[in-house]
Image (cartoon, rainbow, N blue to C red; front, side):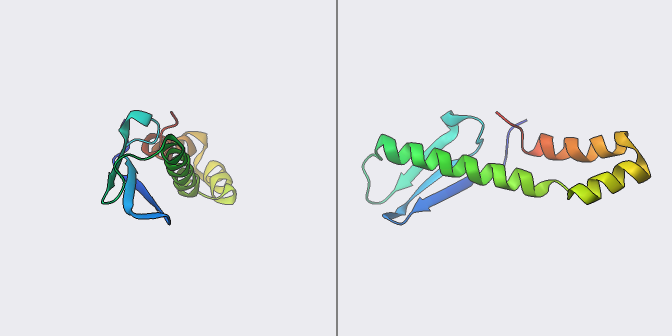
Length: 96
C-alpha cells in the first residue's frame, strides 16, 4: 500500500524550496522544488529525508488509540476487534 498524503517540509535558509515525499518508506519518492537552489546539497537532502520520516512516524504514532482505549477495546470487544483497529493504522502508515 502506498502512502497517499504528500509530506513536505521547508527550511528557514531556503523558504522557497520545498522537499516532498509521497511515500516516506521509499527514498526514491523524495523530490524538491526551488526558486533559488539549482541543486540541494547532499546534507540538505539527508536532513529533508530525516525530517519527513520523523513527521511520518509522529503521524503514525498519533493515529493509534491511547493505551487505555486499546485495553478497553480488548476487554469489551476482544482481541480480534482490537487487531482490526490497529491494522487500519498499520495499513495507512506502513513501516518501510
